[in-house]
Image (cartoon, rainbow, N blue to C red; front, side, top):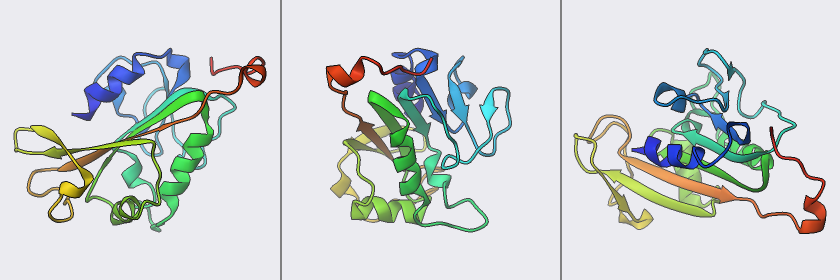
Length: 184
């Protein structure tokens, strides 16, 4: 369900303007953009932790599909504050007018769920999708519509609620923008 939404956004940009955190899209579509994935070894994939990844380039679009929930959680030493740090770090890599688009399954990482409930991670736009059947049917729901905390793997396999979130950076004023170069 996440793939077509994110892929549509990726196709609006040149490959050199896109950074993907977590090697997901290449399993479904032909891709040429930069990919950072700490664990998946594949041609063209940079194997670094998202927080340690540095780039002189600024990106028009940074995407992450059901990946950031693993940050600080699926590690030898769990870190409650690593996800907010990762999002802050990614935001710094956005070009003026750029977008960070992430999907986050709820119920997998209790630290992430807690940050989202408490509003510790700020997004410009957020919407929620809830799985309604074992046949992978989904519907958009409000944040307040959950009667109980969403559970990963229950009642259906894998994610049952997915957050789509976007951060947009403002454009620079024209006089500052003149000498600015985007990623190539």
